[in-house]
Amino acid sequence: MNISIIIVSWNVKPLLQKCLKSIFDYTTGIDFEVIVIDNASKDDSAQMVASEFPQVDLIASNQNLGFAKANNLGLEHASGNYILFMNPDMEFIENSLRAMHDVMANDDQIGLATCQLDYPDGTRQNNIKNNPGLCDQILILLKLHHIFKTKKLNKYLAKDFNYFKEQEVKQIMGAFVIAENDLIEEVGGWDTDYFIWWEDLDLCKKVQELGRKIIYTPSTKVIHYESKSFVQQKSLVKQKRFNKGMRTYFKKHHGILSYLIISILSPISLLLAWLSQTFKIKPQPQSKI
Image 1: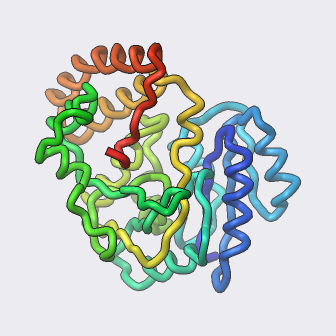
Image 2 (image 1 turned 180 degrees about the vertical axis):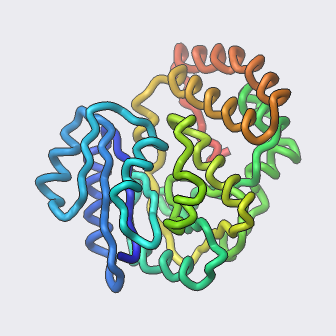
């Protein structure tokens, strides 16, 4: 098996249906399997997959396992040399699976890779970042990144990144990540200390520490509807999970002092999230900053 596609889904039945159809419509010239982990959806997603896509390996969980734990469950069933972790709110418009396989196969030093992601209107999504630092994350935590565009923040968000050039990068968005199966096994899979958010940064950091390459390629592109599961949750719930992920990441990779600073500032971010929720202010994703 060349590639195993793992999709973790939660209450996005129409998008998951479109995603799966596009995979089978556009993928040729490569052996692949699709594994869907349904995180206890209430919209009959699992039933749709079972009836319309019997070739898919469906794992219907009776509880929401979160992103990291559900991906690891999918890994237990995967037999591909490469693993594509793909969100359900994505859609193929060309033979992207073959293109990503070829990128990985052409260089055995590549551990992770991603491609160009476009919004449905055809505009590009900024899916590349640099490693996070304490200063830029404090700005984001306190929502000051909407006001102050500092050099450190712009560096973290990779504002000067050339999306027309294939190149090595530091961080790629977890929505679409192809990985070498042996490498994922070496790092122990996705870190289940994270429920959602920051697990992709953690994975990239571990791959960097092993000296393996992380590659962005514009050789193919995928449509990303973005955050369709997240919008179902209130701002305060999302902020709590984001903060927990940030604290976990900084404690593991930056030490106890950074962890304590983030912890002290977290209640302020929760207040801001509550105000946003109360006054129905729509949050802007970092990819659009």
